[in-house]
Image 1 (cartoon, rainbow, N blue to C red):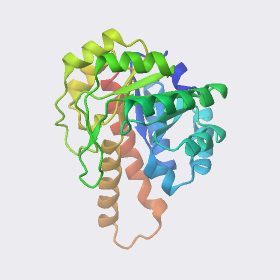
Image 2 (cartoon, helix red, strand yellow):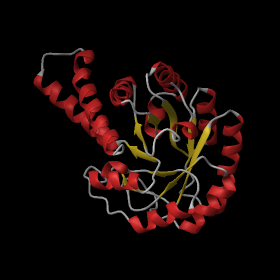
Image 3 (cartoon, rainbow, N blue to C red):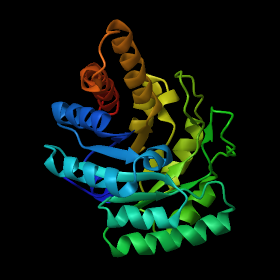
Image 4 (cartoon, one colour):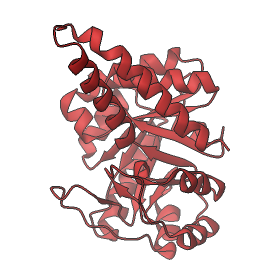
Length: 272
């Protein structure tokens, strides 16, 4: 069942959102959600749509979402390109994110308003970011800046976004669960901002803190690196154990099963 972000966030206190890079991990995530009877969000980030055109991966994920036994949202993650956002909307995505976190607040506000107008005219939800979640990868030049609650309130009210990503200490692409979170800041933001809240970079968050963020009212929690590591490490092991095999279709099932189990684990943590 294909839903918008706005509608899917009404179904659960917290919905898990996973970055996927093709059929294999998308299918595994959907199977995990179906096994648990929970809604789920499939996201494609810049790396994914640079490798597979938006129109191709979008069409595939929309077909998979419609066939799923649980509600699924198809979301364009971290886009800074309005043309890509328009392409995603035309390709069937039900949610888009404009990431203006590296811009000054006035320009972020101006462009986000324009994206909201465009997307809402097509019945598509919009996520934006205020403050900025940094990256553990030093090759990515991006500022990290905690969200200011008063700016978050103003931004949400002025733009009309359907969900707002905030920065409370998570870091994108962390390989270990060691993020230090400012829960007092999260509590203040949650108490003052009326729209659903999103936390990015959650692979680096300890399990107990994932559950705590859900309990404190975070509505969408993004995970990517943990699934990529699971897929890649399992794939490497499978290839090393089968040196004479060359058919890639023989390599994928073990990785797909491992991703399914990891997705189940994360969805369960957020469903407590």
